[in-house]
Length: 422
Image 1 (cartoon, one colour):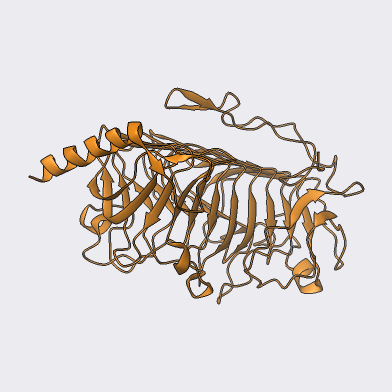
Image 2 (cartoon, rainbow, N blue to C red):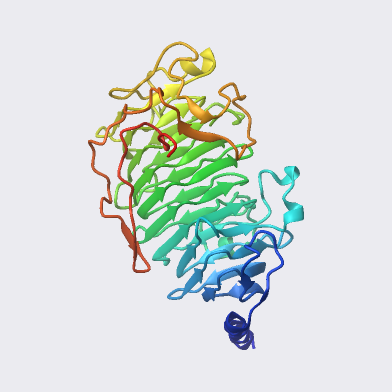
């Protein structure tokens, strides 16, 4: 009977793709038609058609060997009582566009300040059998629910497989798999935005902001990962923009090349002192270039008991602090890692990056992101022309997912994620 219901629902979606009905939700372009919508739980695969609204009433599972393609403009509404998890045992391709992104969210009337740090649904959890996950022009918000003994992820032994864990927006765990996350927004999550335990990976041109209630990182990478991380904006993540680690003893050794990222106001909301920009540990091999740190709580920091691989290199990173306390915590020491040709002063206000529109006196613990801010650089910025392009990415030819090649962007001579405004 269950299989019959699933086949019937799939037939309904395919039929709807040809018939269509007028869209009524303001998050999807009103000039287009909704061509397939439904209320879903259980096993799903196939296509969620362009412009459709998908209401998720319980945990959904993409079966091993199957794929779910989410076309541009799809609105995925998660039930705040069921707090669904999205389990990916097969492949997931979320293929939005800049004009019509895919959006994973909750009903609009629930998007209130009391839910600023989410907890209203689980996350996207890709099992070790998942070969490919693509998130392109996709918005994920208001998730990061806490697992219980009855959670599907716990029963399946996924993620940390215990109750009481705050789920990330995205977990990927296949060391032989491929993950591309590009042009996406992660916001309003309880803890980590991403937690990656293996794979060939590109993170590019994403924004991570207003995440982490008492802890959590923007990008959290473990052993088994080979990754290029570039042109991302991190604002007010509770702890680090990136936590880079080789923990877990998977093969290959974690190797992360992170370059041309902009990191602001990270780390200040964590109730205990740890990191506040990029954290290195457990023999991770890192290459960190052209990153711009403004009002982050610390410079690049290491676990002194379990430090990074000795081959790791840092260079041409720029640091700005509005307060003297911030600047003092940028200075290289046993646990704060310096780099070659870094631009780092010793006085508050030195190295003003000259953002087009961002008040540099914004409180460090501010978590509210103003979408009118503009982190492009004005002429005269010390970040312009101060970077390096003299390094090789892990994936200079990009990565291919679902027969489409996604580039790992070339480095720029400016520092940070944004040059001058075109």
